[in-house]
Length: 140
Image (cartoon, rainbow, N blue to C red):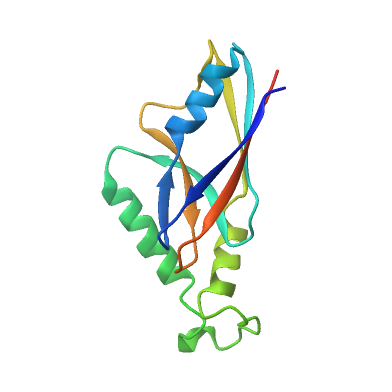
């Protein structure tokens, strides 16, 4: 069963597409059918399958999550106890809990079965740059 770890460098909060790397991994595997499991090995970022044609979608998603879960320094977040790593830390954990850390994508004819406008994204929830590890595992 083919498996690899991708390392993505982020520049702070945002959506970082890695569809091409996942597609290349599947292609090189030579496997025609199966399931690609994508798993991020962190608790303050997550994964999304989202539209990759219009960048306004990413802009609006970031704005929505900022409104939904503001920094711990915001007065509405006074209840937050975990503040050891700064005002973006606990909100990052909450955003990760609301999204997902693992995604399964069917593979057929040696290709990811994503829709026309779908891309795979690392959703970084922290303000600082990070190096994130993403496991790609292809099962028959």
